Length: 452
Image 1: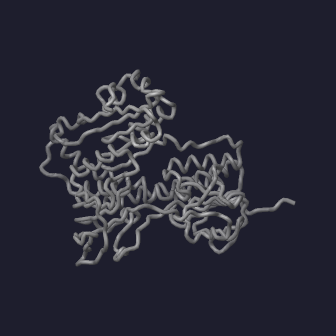
Image 2: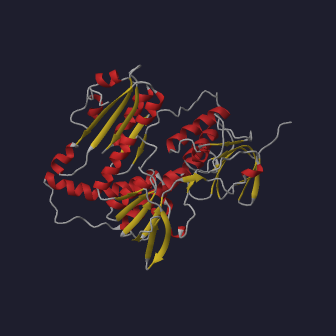
Image 3: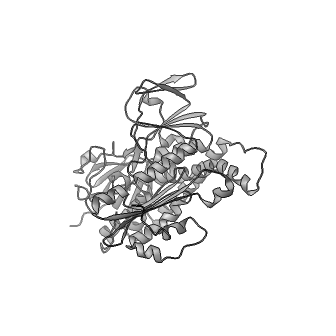
């Protein structure tokens, strides 16, 4: 006797990965449901990469306008930012994207529940007062900002709130050394805020190539961000209409806003996973196998909630692999090596492959090619920006192991380099490629002599 289920697949979380899995499964004729308690599109669309990039664009205009003077464009004074216009236009764009996600789900034939879903058993999901029997559960609930416990931590905001501030602060303290912290420090600084970036470690972006992260630190400081390394907040107290931030060396600083960007944790609290055999790590992330199956055979998970590679395109690829494994021929795979990524700090970072440090640890004989130069726009623009590029090559095979860039358009350029590294390109392939002149990108195919 075959058991009858209300749904073949019930997806908890309507972020990029969850929506892709739901749509693909529904297109294969499966009866699918999606539940979302907050907003369609998940972190990336609502409080992540999309609004962040819009704010980055906004923060770059003052520097572009200053640069334009060297090209003959004269203005009496710089325009003044109207923060509510930026904030509200951003919100309108996000709402448009929310509508697109809603249509994608509805047009696929999947049922969409606006509410918090919880797991009440290995094949049971409860949402909006009703329990549904399901053949397979997919947890795609993403991550959530983490603010540590310390006196006054309730006065700090996370990256979630940064997109909806009533007004722009005059002085801000940004705490953290990862990509979210350096991105928001650049945004605030570009928008005219007196910005202080505080990090307890000795170098920013510690998971990236050290030479490149040092270039970013230098570039941010030259653009006006006040960087405080080896420093930690011990307390935040109210002071007038703002706050007094005390550091572990007993010095203090006044601020109108304190942003904590000290990491994100898997959003699994209160999901009811204790009603299953699903295993969680100490940080709340879900343990899955190579097929994204948990210790409970009917429960799967993907995206940020499994804490592998927390990138939107990765979650989408994981969803396609999962649906193929469940309802297709099982031939789809995902390769976590050589995933291109970017940090939209200012200056911008693009990277694919191994850092110099990782390459040294894994390969016996490598060569490193570097280039550092002033971008062409600055020759008339009068700025101090520079572009830094780096190739890391395995001398035994000539294969390019890593490709890194700091500077304007790094993300756009490294995307193409990602294809080259995925295809196994050698340094000889780079050398044989004709450059596009004049461009910054041509430097990647003209570096002939190793730096070290």
